[in-house]
Length: 119
View 1 (tube, rainbow, N blue to C red):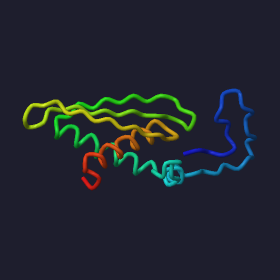
View 2: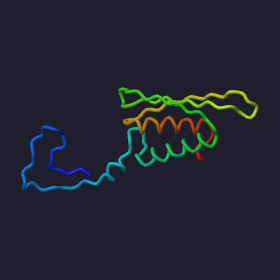
View 3: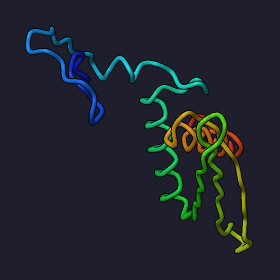
View 4: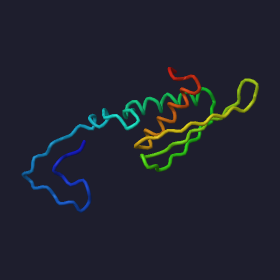
């Protein structure tokens, strides 16, 4: 929750004791979609789905997130051995305002690329 009228930054002027306090729900921020179109809830759901598939499929997942002009850029790579023992590798990327959104975009791209869009 964020309280209006109270300083949120160190060194900011203090609000007077008579200043009204208005509570803003954090849920409002959750509903606001990221620039990529993913809400915070959707990004979390995609991350959970990605992690579940990686664990069940014995896939080694690696990700790298770096600061980008639009927020963050995340590179995601998967590597695993198929039924014949051959090494399989895939890589995707995602952009987002936050690391969470960028990771979710990369995971979404990977799941779609591997045919798990509805997994």
